[in-house]
Structure formats: C-alpha cells, structure tokens
Image (tube, one colour):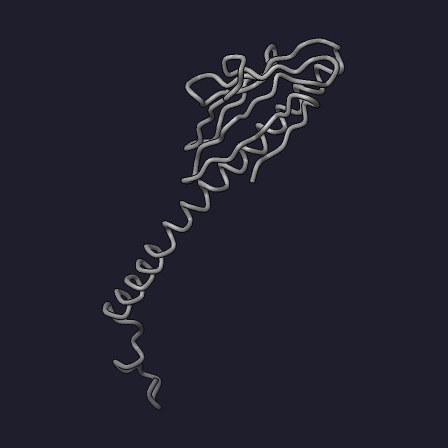
Length: 145
C-alpha cells in the first residue's frame, strides 16, 4: 500500500501466470508420484491376500483338529475365490489371482490328526508370486519368501 492507503498494482495479488506455474508444478509432482502409489497399492493388496490365505489354511487345519475329521481348502472362481469346504468364501483383492497346486486336484485336505495332503497356494500379483505352503507331515502353513 502507498502512504495514502491506496493499493498499487504491485500489491494487487497473484497473477494468472503465477497461478498457472503453481498448477503446472503440482501436476508434475502428481505425475511422478502416481505410478509409485499404484505399485504400493498393488503390493499391499497382494500382501493382504497372502495373509488371508495363510489364515484360512490355518483355520481349516484347526477346524479339522477340533472336529477330528477332514476339512478341504480350495481355490475356485478362476483363482478369485478361496476358502474351506462348508465355510465362507473369501475373495482375492483386486489385481490378485490364486492357483492351488496339490495332488488332490487343487484342494488341500486337512485331517483330524493334524496332518494334511500338502500343497501350495500361489498368490499372483504386483509383478511377483508368493507361495503359501502346507506341509503334509504336520499340516504346518508357511509363507515362502
């Protein structure tokens, strides 16, 4: 402001060019960060599905032990659904698919004594594959690195 209190042209505020420069810089930062965000979200979706599959397998083993019977865990729906027989069906996270490899046609069986038929559930996503293994002799569930 001038000494008389009137606004001069220098104090009028931001110009259109200044605003466009700020918008341009913001757009460039967003374009650089967006692919990293997408990769992070895909990796998190895969990790969530791996944890959920491992929990489902452990729950199937516990159910077999508790009921002293046989419980099956299977992957269905084109690799998008999984769960134990007679239980709720879980869905894989978006962008993640599953493959079950076992001698029992893609099903992993858990028996009342704690053992299992053994097998592997492969979780595909985020440009990598993670194996969730079930050991036959003890029914132990482990996530392979």
